[in-house]
Image (cartoon, rainbow, N blue to C red; front, side):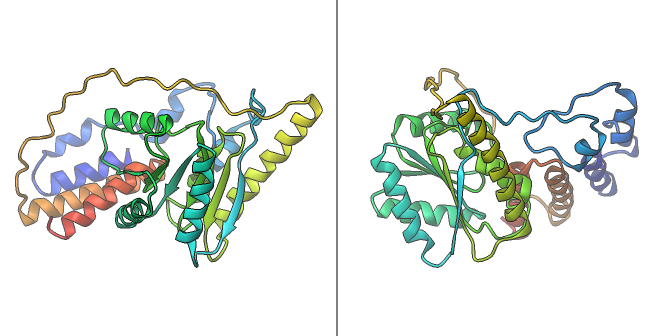
Length: 302
């Protein structure tokens, strides 16, 4: 509701919509909540609201294959790229894959280029890649066409890849929606499909978000380890077939884009800023990051 309202505020203020546009809107949260009866909240990272409203919380910590949540190591940023290359080469020798997450597009592109010059087969997954291309990239990573995937964030559908045994988080101590407790826990989970899963956080300090994410991960590991020991279970990497991409996608995005006036640009910035805040609030971090970059380009006049 908030994002829709903010977007229409801008459109109505600048004369692009009539005030009656307010009438066609989503329900507010209170309106929605008053209309539903019994409910079940399902989340890998439930928030305070869900915990407070729940009379009983059922955790699904144990995995059928005995997999543990990944081991987490915090390393200093000094010499981080050299250390990362060393860790990547270890995984390449074992025919495993690596995911690396950065905070900015520039750093992701620079890192991809640097790794490539060092003979590492690497790809960069940018935020505006479409669904079909994303699935093709994931398929190629799983097939070993390349060994390392770099991205601004890894909270996207389809990145639960069994072959990935290492997730490297650069600038882990930079607080923000891409390095919040929830975001870190979800990113850590990208290494949880492999029996040798490991996460390396490169940071010069341990933020409250890092501390909570690490603590929660090791709490789960203890439960999983105890269960495996009691039931004589040996963790096994998930076996998952690599599927071909058979869909054919057509896009209408190739139309020439109209140059915006200063007024239109300002209205769009206001609209996108509201959408960015709304996306971050509901944990749509990837979408929020994409909007952040679009806003920056608009401010630069691009």
